[in-house]
Length: 259
Figure (cartoon, rainbow, N blue to C red):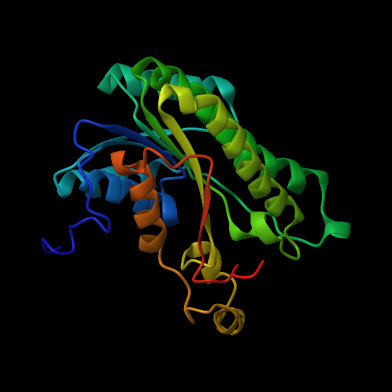
């Protein structure tokens, strides 16, 4: 990898800061973790897939960054509290939390099983709550923190076959606004990023015909890249974003314009 390819998509100095990224093993979460490390942050990478996490840590370390990984079920309160405690023991602080872990169990509402609803709400919404609650404790003591929750345009506008996913991501937006109001006095910002159609493993499963139709609906006429989302996250994680809180920023190529 060349030096130019090693540069962050949004250059910001996060040296001496510690970041925790959930859902870091692939897609948006992986790119966010890599970009945070390129900006100097020490990165705690959290997901279920230990092998992919270890590959991510090796990549970050090969680029000169610092990272460690934890295999965690984000819906398990005890595991979440434990990993935050271990991050604090390792690096003595926690400055940035990116709640990215998420799943889909898409099907039309009449066919949706209880488990499909419960799994999505638990991972996407409960997981965000559990990690935010655990992370705010050290952040409040530091009187500094940046919390970025990954929502979705589906949480803003809904989507056929995604009533569970849309509900969870809309819940993330409401949670973000409430948490921002509670934590602003401690100099902790809480914002959401709502990606549109981004090139990931998840969208690859949609097929070329569907993706071609989607592109026609996007004013930018292309699917987004994980780097597009990571750039927004890096800005919100930076000291420069200290007066921005409770907001939801759509990274969707203009898909939601006019909603």
